[in-house]
Length: 359
Image (cartoon, rainbow, N blue to C red):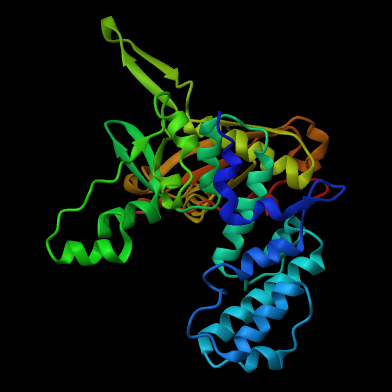
């Protein structure tokens, strides 16, 4: 079977090394990887000051850069990109690891780090968490931690596709600006294959290595299916290849990696718990929805239908929980916006769990 981690080389995870705690420390080549990205790479129009700084950083990627070296660049956008990169680079170096820096960004209040930086940090961390994983459903579910999804309900199935890829296909046929121009000219474009990840496409998913083709697979988030039986009976069965089950397994790894504690997470259709004590949303939509439900506020049916799933999180060792909620489950929510978008916020599991000693 193909090595899934090869697909994620675009996040630079192969230029990180583990420290004694198992957290990821950048090497010089990690910073060179960033300097080679389109946001920082040299172009034909690059001025002499930009070329000089770029060359010096490629030689010594972690060196201190005085403000005047950035100010000397002719292009305002180039200066802004370098200031953002250097500020982020220095924060990561100062924190000692990607994980320490990532958690610190969210504890400092208003986030000053661009989403691109955060998403690629998460992607690199998850690539290491799944280094020995061969289950394609878990790899595809892990994409939810750093790639925005577009969710749709079709014939009772909840399907999650990469929003950037789906939007690009809708606008350009998957051919970028060239495709947009061809469409405007009335040309017929070749159809790009979008597949639901299944037994017949799993190996094909793992072989997808080029560009956005990696994200052309849709994840089925349907956890339960109902079969109508004779005499008006309904049999509810849990799907063996549930995308929600795969996501839960990835989130368990995420919590253990940051907090050093073992948890069990399982999808739930509903919360029927009179002693419901703690909850958190895995995204902004579900955070607000769970808060309203917990407080007993009326929630419109249309808004309730945006809830993709609930999860029940339990600590393997309850002694890791705060005393006032020890032994109680933590309920998690996952919901899409009114427009069908889902942007999971993995940082919520770093900040809002009832731990006795937060990481």
